[in-house]
Amino acid sequence: MAAEIAAILAPRWVARVITWTLSGGSPATFRLRFAVNEAARAALEEELFGKRILFTDKTVEQADTATIVAEYRSQETVEGDFRQMKDPKVVSFSPMFHWTEQKIRVHVVYCVLALMVAKLMVREADRAGMHLSVRELLTTLAGIEETVLLYQGERGRPRARRMLTGKDATQRRLYDL
Image 1 (cartoon, one colour):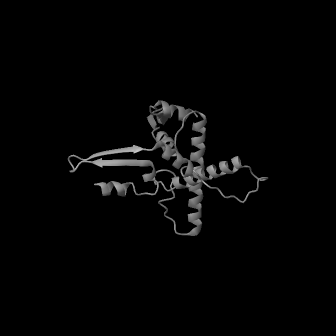
Image 2 (spheres, rainbow, N blue to C red):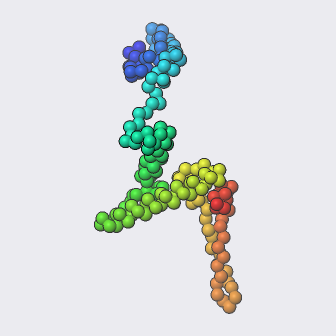
Image 3 (tube, rainbow, N blue to C red):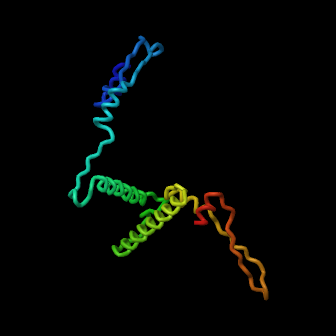
């Protein structure tokens, strides 16, 4: 048992933070006591955790540190958006049933435009105080349904009246945007 615990604590920094003792002679009597050394944890956080090194070709005159960090974070957002395009249920590249390069390019343009529209809708919802992901927003909007009522009109011509089904509060707020 002690060997298993030692293996769990083997990663390079874990043993610096966690101390432990194992007592008892059999599995029924084993007692594990452990503690987190807060000072060592704080030192480790200061030393290793949460640090990123950014390299840039921009000079100090072109961009200050805050601008470079903001650009880096916006790059993460864009990369996340393109990862979103792999989700088969939300603004996805696949399935793609095209074989010519021209049709594939058109398909990609449609997908990128769909992502842009979805992100624009998320931004507008965010400005209205509704913090939703693309998936949540599209799922909520998909729940709004339209019903067409057909009835006899004047001179025998059928008339159609379109009505939306009941909406919950979130759907109502999104619809009113």
